[in-house]
Length: 241
Image (cartoon, rainbow, N blue to C red; front, top):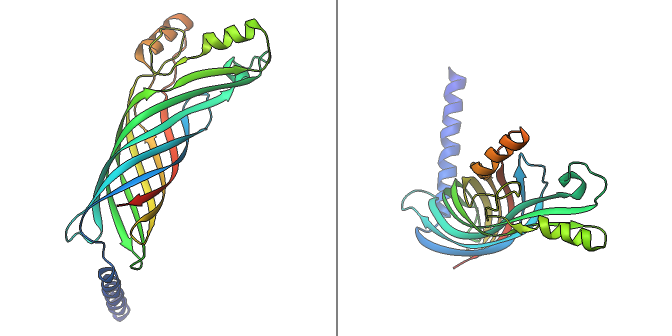
């Protein structure tokens, strides 16, 4: 019993010291804005395509809640490039006649809405993390196949397989629906209340294949296409106004 009492007393003392340290550098309440840009690596989950590098940029509004000891709400508008790529051999189902690459570029406008917590280690250096949903709409992008080789037949095949990512051309040309949603998190560090380094990760929860494409593929080829979801890892730098 004495050991338990000593442990509780020590925990209370440590907690009191931690709270006192936290209050010394508690984030300032109110609204602030951040602009950011950087790169991401995305992948179409449950699809033969592997990772693809792209770019991202956007703006966020952070509202530090009053008397919440570092808890804040954030929302914004992002532009991001997602998609994936694979070899021409895999695209043509392990056909060794063709060499080259096949790429999907999916460009989205996204609205993230998250809850975060910030801890200021010193007056100059703070750390934060946030979690919440995002909602996106596809605004552009292209599926493109590059085949190594020359000749009119090769160029004609490339042109046939190149199309806009979100336009519904009908079976058998693959296309994606524009709407997506999922959940993501972001961690970051801020220096002198302005300069930020951020790492984020988003998991799409919506199946972005068109239902009409999946049904047509099942009817004509007898195969049920798997669900396809976006995955995205980003590294960005930001400036808080």
